Picture 1 (spheres, rainbow, N blue to C red):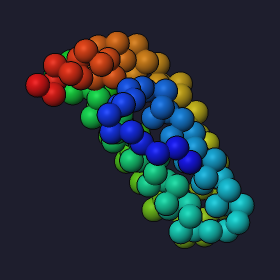
Picture 2 (tube, rainbow, N blue to C red):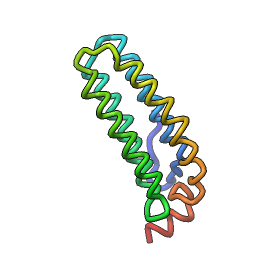
Picture 3 (cartoon, rainbow, N blue to C red):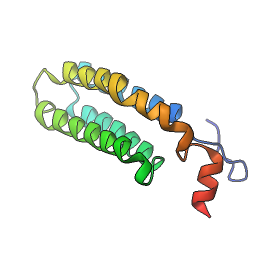
Picture 4 (cartoon, rainbow, N blue to C red):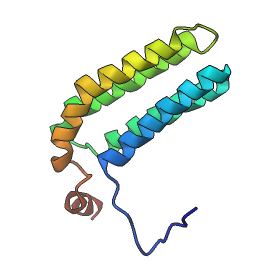
Length: 129
C-alpha cells in the first residue's frame, strides 16, 4: 500500500477512470459467479461512480454530447441492476452488452475530446482559479 503524499499531486487521466470501470466489470462478474447480489450492486455502483468522475472532467457547452452519453450509460447500468440483480440470470450478458456498447460508441468520443477536457492539467488549473 502506497500512502498519498499531499505535496505531490498525481494527475488523473481518462485511462485511470476507464481502468476503474474495467475493475468494476471484473468485480461484478466475480460477484455474479458467487451469487452475491449485494456485491453485484456495489460493483455497478462503482462503475457508475467512475462515469460520474469522468463527466466532471467534461464541463461546459462544448461537452454536452459527452455528458449526455455518460448519463445515458449510467442510467442503462441502473436499469440493468434494477432488472437483474434480484435473481435474473440475464444480468451478466446485459453487463457485457453494456460494456461493448460503451467501448464502441462512447469511449471513442471521450478519447477524442480528452485533449480539450479537464484531464489536461493546464485546463484544470485554469478552471480551478
